[in-house]
Length: 258
Ligand code: C2E
Ligand code: CA
Ligand code: CA
Image (cartoon, rainbow, N blue to C red; front, side, top):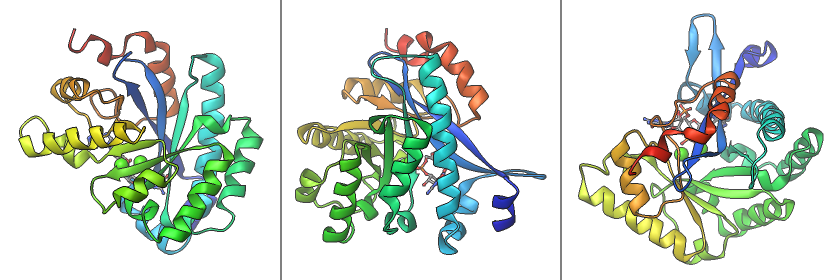
């Protein structure tokens, strides 16, 4: 992994996040890939080790820089209101770094990205972990002006009273609930309740892992704001995203349910 980092073998892939109301791409999630001579390796295979040996920190620093550079260039080529956003995952190791906020500020300054266009995704167990510590980190990040999402929502344990108080903007519903939404009434009910809860707390909702037209229709009925998944696009490189942006007036969500 160390050698791969030195030799620049990590690639950033992107997956569009689409507004269910307009059918347009509102932003992207940056996802790491390891480009080896044998082929591309998924982060599931190496993120845990990178985290364990601390390499996740320089890796994600590099990813953030590159993702911000791409975002800047897409924002200027495809101006929109509100502007396109970039979501990045914050690992537990990074979350515990005292210099996390200053590192992010540096990347934003160096790339000229508006902090409000960066969305940090933090999994539920970390965001909801040790109340005092995580609350402090979240407030610091919020003060920087970035947006915060709780990732994989529904899989951990959230204290509802804390969810109300922590400065998050978005909940991302874990794809396990979306996957069975069309066949399993219980999953559908969970999705409905999460969306209702989020809206009551003034939060927006992104559904992950949307694969079918049926998923999109159900989510639209439930007033879910945004979706991300294979239905729109698999994660792919920046060139592929550029092509999607060029056709952004006509993504598939626009035609669904009409
Ligand atoms: P995640 O943050 O929940 O990312 C979403 C994952 O869902 C991605 O897997 C994406 O490819 C996959 N996905 C998206 N749409 C669909 C769909 O319609 N169906 C299905 N079955 N899957 C879908 P990926 O890229 O393999 O990443 C796995 C996990 O690795 C991520 O889960 C995230 O926790 C972690 N990860 C990836 N890149 C980074 C990174 O740069 N930094 C950190 N800290 N973690 C990362
Ligand atoms: Ca994520
Ligand atoms: Ca997720």
